Amino acid sequence: MGDDSQLENILVSYVQQTYDYLPISGIDISALWDVNDRYAWDLYSKCIQSKDVDRELSIHNAQYFDEQLFRRYEDKRSGTDPKLEPIKVGCKPNKILKDGLTRLNLIMANKSGGFFYFVASGEGVSPVSIGNTGLDDENARIDMRTDGILDAFGNTLFMRARFPTGIADATITEFGATDAEEDPSTFCWRVVLDSNEYLEHVQSETWYNSSHYLVTYSK
Image (cartoon, rainbow, N blue to C red; front, side, top):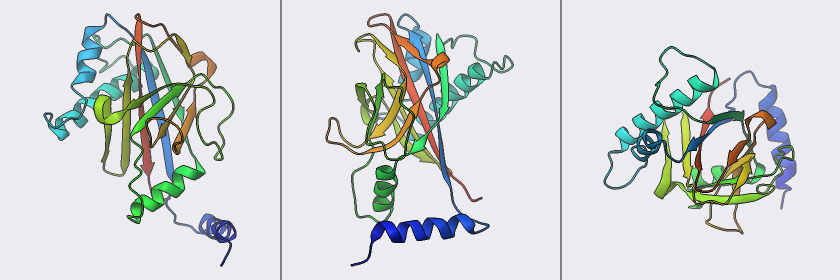
């Protein structure tokens, strides 16, 4: 039997030297909301996919919601919805984890049905490494099938989840996607926010959300 890791290293080295290859990059945008902000809550509810909701409409609503968050983050006033006012917005590129890449390839080869249906949040701050197998200090895990979206449009894999106000007080510093409701589980990616973008969640006073985009492109 050959050495899978040795072959993998050879392939990666070869691909990185060619002029055309397919990177996968990701970015996560998150926000903290006042529990009394009914406009934001109701708009997010229109983004959730279910058998009773039109798929294209839910994606359209979600794209509008997140476009507004990006505008807030970049302080772009023109075109910003004045009724959508998050307390704090965080934005950070991700790192796809080694276990996540392995699983994505198995899914594409139709050799695994272990989809990444869950988004987890946490309070860990250690630097992200491709060898991470989970979050540093997880505090909550949400099923995107019941409170979010797991879908795709164009060359983008779209993941988003809403974390309700009932979650205990926490300083949210990290997010990741995983394949099970509880451990043991496999994580696809991890993001750690900059310290000035931490989300200070207070039970019964705030809720928060995470939207994640994995983009595949030819370079």
